[in-house]
Image (cartoon, helix red, strand yellow):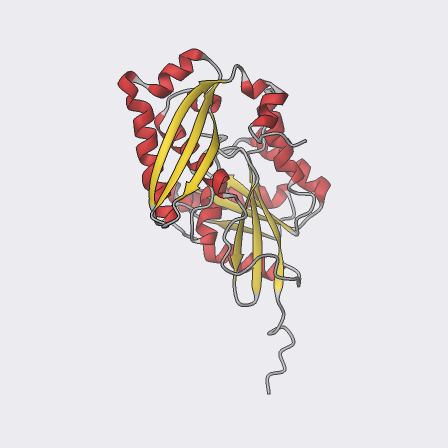
Length: 304
C-alpha cells in the first residue's frame, strides 16, 4: 500500500521572471514552456507587456509571468514598463531573478535586490548565458551572489541551449505550495490572438531595424478574420511610429522593409495558426506616442 502523503499533492502557483534588460528572461520562459509565447531579440527592452506562460503537468501547474527589464529610466514608456515589472512581484508565490553572466550591470542588480528585500518572497537566482564564459569564472560570481542575498538556490544555465532548465523546474516545484489548477491543461498562454500577432510583428521590426527605430514602433491589430472554411486567417494591422522620418524607414525603399517584416511575420504566424495567413500592414505616424499617456493607453500600454 502506498503511504506517501505527498504523492497525491497538486502544486500550483505564480512565478515572476525578473531581471535587468536583455538578460534572457523571455528565452528562459519559452524554454520552460517548450513553446514560444514571448518574443525574443538581441536588443534590450524588447518585452513591453507582462506575458503569462502556463506549464501544466500531472501534479502541478506553474503560471510564469515574463516581465520587462527593470532599470532606471526617465522616459514615460520605460517608467511604465518598470512599474509593470515591479507590480508583478506583489501577488506571486516565487521569483526567478535572472542574471546575465556575460554582462552584469551591478547598479541594476543592486536595485533589483533592494526590491526583492522589500517584497520578501522566495527567490531562485538563475545565472544565464554560461555557454559564453569559462566554467572557472562562475564560482566567484556564485559566491558574490550568495553574499548579496539569501537565495533559495543559485542555478547556472544556458537558456539558449536548454542547459540547466530541468534543474530550475525542479527547484520551482520544490518551493511551490499546494494549490488549484488555474487554467485548462492545454493552455500555454493567456495572450489574446491579437496580442500575440502584434508582438510577433514587433519582434520582426526589432530584428530588422537599426538603432532607435524599433523602440519608436508600436503595433495595433485592427482586425482578424477567420475564413469560415478555416483555410485562411486575414490580419489587418497598423505599425505606429513617432516621426515621419521613421515612417520612411519602416516602409523602406520601394516598400522593401515593410515587405520583409510582413514576410517574416506571416511565415511565423502560419506556423502558429497552422493555416495560411494574409497579412495587411500599414504604417502611420502617432507623434511622440511613447511620451504621451493617452497614446500609451490607446495602444494598450497603460497600467491605469
